[in-house]
Length: 287
Image (cartoon, rainbow, N blue to C red):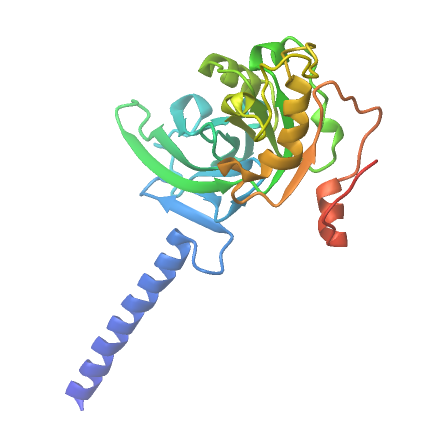
């Protein structure tokens, strides 16, 4: 009888162990039904969204086991982000042991998808000698974009952008800039730093040397306009009607709102992307 009880006791211990292991996997890896992923060590925890579509996303950084000997102040926390940047003005402390940061993904030129890596290092002793590092990775995919076509990014920076904050979508749609001349990383970073949205870039300069079959751009008396470059207007028309949707950067994109760089918004707009989805619409014009 004692042996039977001992066996039952051992079996119950084993079952409890596997149950706790299963719960831990669901908690720390997000689980199939979870909206968040948790990366954790003994002191630090990072909580990130399980799926990121469109908008900048919020990351929660927390202490797991607060104690008087553990410091957890902003100045004791080092955050590095690969393929993204933090909107520091939106950093928010939700409790003594948790604060939130807002991250805007930075996809590479020509792509609407990127894996963002967040690495957090924190001092865990009053002396500052102890440090713990936790990292997390999330994948971002833009699905809604506000698209523009510009001659070059330098020219664009010298002009006033349309205020995309007038579009009431919560900033979830990315800003997609097709540009027609080679540009520098400095120009790309400057535009990203001044935008509250994810900004995508695609160099389409090679299209400016392509012409329809049978068309000779060097032939005399060919109609052209020289506002910015020869045949720029014709290239623009052809791009929006024929070429833009074949660009690799459009993979994964579902809705596109075209905006000219010299456009202006006189009042706040509704969320047109939400309206298109509600109406199951394919095309909207003359707003």
